[in-house]
Amino acid sequence: MASSKLQALWNHPAGPKTIHFWAPTFKWGISIANIADFSKPPEKLSYPQQIAVTCTGLIWSRYSMVITPKNWNLFSVNVAMAGTGLYQLSRKIKHDYLGDAEVAVAKESSQT
Image (cartoon, rainbow, N blue to C red; front, side, top):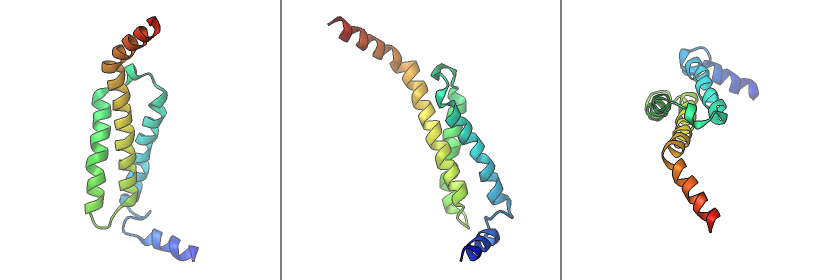
């Protein structure tokens, strides 16, 4: 049974014998690098880079569902890209625009 499933994967139109398998597989490196950057200080994050990662993830997630055959590897990597990009953007926005407000609120609450 496992042999037939492996054979089906091997012979799939988006299987390991095609670029449709390997391109998304290597694209996981971008998502993994973005996850590694979760520990990076928000001031070191780039708006253009994270917007590009997020938009790429959103656009290609949709595209991967309308092409034939459905490419679930492409879909999953792009959902991961959109998710990590949105998270990084939220960190950057929180740091740049909401950071001072939190400090002010913390000062007020400590004085009372």
